[in-house]
Each structure stands twice: as structure tokens, then as C-alpha cells.
View 1 (cartoon, rainbow, N blue to C red):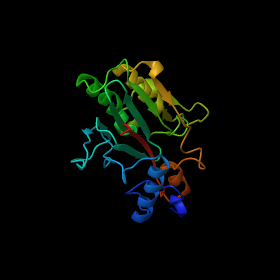
View 2 (view 1 turned 120 degrees about the vertical axis):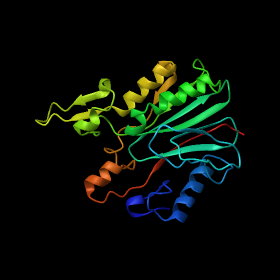
View 3 (view 1 turned 135 degrees about the vertical axis):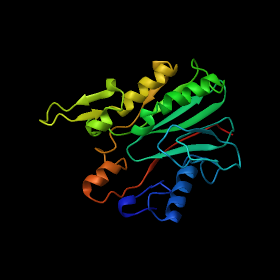
View 4 (view 1 turned 180 degrees about the horizontal axis):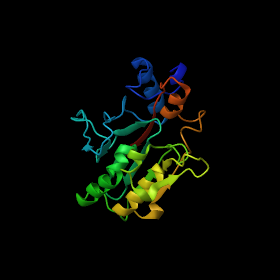
Length: 229
């Protein structure tokens, strides 16, 4: 239902789009997937490493970038527009989680810390947990300044050798994949979907692309997961 820079299925509540259009977009999405709920459990993102548990009819008490539940019928979601969304599920224990991982969250190992907590608390088991990684900025599109690059895992930094500047680039998806494996997820239980958000304007919203265009205004995508009721 959204138009302009938000066209057309903008799911970002705080993106600057008209709230009623965003609500209608969510209704379209949820109905198309056969969900009976009217709205998702959508944490207010803080670009950190906080994890909260979601319960029926209970608002989330604090901002967070990761949310999990054992409650059936709840739709967990995180929004993105270049950052990585990761979805976690353990069918053996009946637990699902949604994680938002930008460079700040990745620097704080949010996906690894979320998985470590879920494993330690018995919410999930490493041998039965699956993780899906969504679209995000590719390493070629995620150029960083030197000071910021120095704070990120060096194994996932690359230099653009085609440029005289040789600026650092960061592999956001690759770093999160490595952090998930380090936490105990089996490599075969990790899947990746979607390409580079910046380089595919027909498919994805991208904040960096909007910045390059001069507006800095764009919609948000969402990754959703639920336990069937």
C-alpha cells in the first residue's frame, strides 16, 4: 500500500511512512501467509545485542534486536534495510527466534550470543537447531572507514584492491555464519537466501542505496517466523 520511496510493501513502523499504510502492509503479509494474528511481535530495534522472550498478549518490555518464544501462534519479526536478519528454529524443543544483525550487532556477536543463550538455557539444542540467514549488504557494498573496520572481526574484512584507496569492506553474512557455527550450530543446518540489498532495487529496500541517491529515505523488509498454532 506504500508509495514513493516506500513502495510498495514497506513494513517499517518507524521508517517515516504513513502508519496506516504500514499496518495495512502487515495485514496483507500476514493474511497471505495464513497467519491468524493481526500484528507481529516486533521489537524496537536498538542495534545492540539484547535478547528478549515473547509471550502472548504481553508487550515487549524493552528494546532488543533478538526475540524468541515457545508460544505457538506468535509471529516474531525483525525489520531490515541492509542489515542481516537471521531466523532460528528448533523443532525438537519448539522454540523459534528472530535476530537483527547490523554491523553493531555483529560486532557484539548478537547471533552467537543468542544461540549460546538458547542452548545454555535448554530452549534449543545445537544438534536440532536450524538457522536461516537473509539478504543483506554484500562485502562489495559494505565499505567502512578505517576506525570502524578496526573494531570488527579481522577475518571478515577485505580490501578493495581494484581501488587506489584500498578501503576495507566487511562480510556481514559470512561473519554471522561463522559466529553461529562457533556457537554450536552445524554448518549443514545453516541456509542463506537472497542477494545484496543495495544492488537489487527491484527486490529489496536499501538504506545505503537511498543515501547514495541523496534522500536517505527507504522502506523496511521483514523476516518472520512462527510456531504453528
